[in-house]
Length: 286
Image (cartoon, rainbow, N blue to C red; front, side):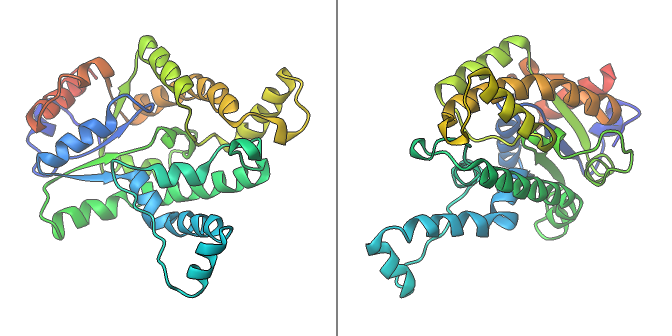
């Protein structure tokens, strides 16, 4: 949604905003703050982990449990229940299921299995993003919320075709929400890389590049077998690639469909009123 002036947005009886940008720029902090200020918080990752990948996640835990004789007997007799306790603030079940490719003894997955789970995530993310218009309606009609914020994952730019003006994900977001890009600085990127090196986590990689990056990583280190790759080492290497790969895609989405604020501006937002002021400044600059 485009606005002719900041006042057009400020005076909207029902505001709907999609936040996007690299992990760590403040999307979820903003969305959580808005939730406390009577905005409906739609977490794309939560929707992925519950509606679209919840069964995959639980089945994977059950497979591991079946390897333990004590738990296997209880599961087969329906004596215990295994579920995923995923929340907006704890997405660990989804991250654990995605995993990292590489050495099994280091917790890695076979590369073929890793790619399969990546494909599942892509389909789930597209479905969750296309659900946004329906949830805007539900937020208002069922729960009585006037305002809506969509908290996207960092991989939004990987599941859209930016050359297709009728891409279903872009259309679902651009036709129903104001799209707001939170742009991180070079210093922010360095901080993210440093944090990731200390504690690497599973990520979604662009399907068109994953196989090439995997082969490049192994070739640079003279690694022949997939099972000899250190999963955490590949994750660290891949994360830096993702940052450089995604930045121009984020910029293009913002240029063609939305507005931009810097991550430094977001730190000063403490309530819904200051968030609306932030969006209005972005509209004025555009």
